[in-house]
Image (cartoon, rainbow, N blue to C red):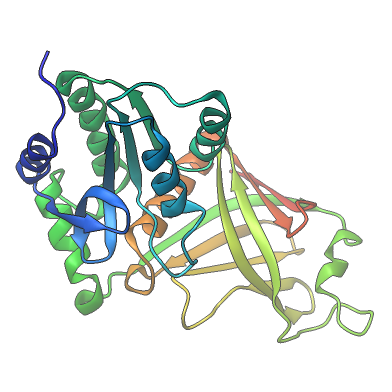
Length: 275
């Protein structure tokens, strides 16, 4: 069985069509753009302590404005982690696409990476022609071409007006500049930091998260019969991981048939049954 080396990893990444370089404490990164890793790898041939620490730093130790790897592999060439570190890695892997392997062969790793690359190209299919080079070219052109993704999901919302009091100002529901932090949840995928405002009140309550600096805008109306949950995604305002998450969310919503709006404490505000 062939062993995993950084030279072998470089050749694999370049064969796919990634730019290969460095990122923070990772031993190697595969990128589309500088400072925005798609894959990162750490090969730890010691007791796993360095790999554990650097992996945590990539996700939990970095500032919010620093892009996090979309996929990360911690390769333990010197043996398994101790139970305490293993438990923390399992917790991290429940939040991010982090894979930990003990003494993997090159064949085993390539099989797993092949699957992640295939998933990346499937999820991001609207931006590419089914290959890594085509997706890399698309991402590089986002700033100049400014593509727009507009999606409208027909739905029947269910809600309790009492729960919507989080949008009240001065004790009543009225149009306001006050933004309420919320999240949108489809089965298995959550979009966080949706800053919603109540923008119109009358026959219907109109809500919008429009913000000139954020990639995602969410709009919907409550009341007045049938409704639609509408999205505008502007990828040049975000990064690849955010665009990937949005596409995952759309696929999950379509498959699961339901989207829930939650407040910052996780309290359900609206349930949108998709039609």
